[in-house]
Length: 124
Image (cartoon, rainbow, N blue to C red; front, side, top):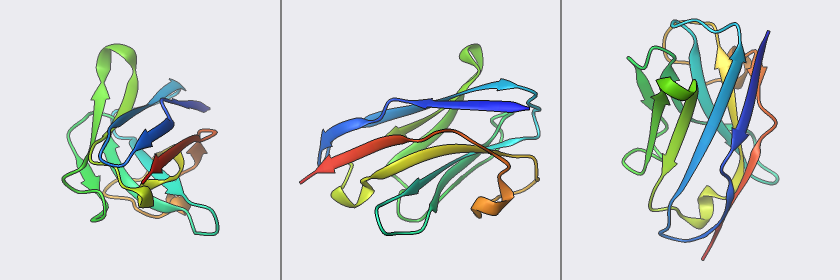
């Protein structure tokens, strides 16, 4: 079993920055993928970014490329999402999730384990 706990959400003005963290515990392997998804009110959950637990592979949604960075903090066993140049349309509940499938995974159904979510609100 894997447990994921997100932290770091909050309220920020447009153009500002936030860092989200996802702490993982339980059985994890270097081949696992850790992804971030988000869901805004009335919208479907969408892929944001993914990293291999080994840190060797990253993938981003086009909407966040160049603004968001996903990285692994090996010492803390966490995966973080640094979000810069935030826009009001980035407002959503952000979830971290773990997949045991290889390759780039952008579909929520490929992820078996999910955190509880953290709210990010960007004001204009």
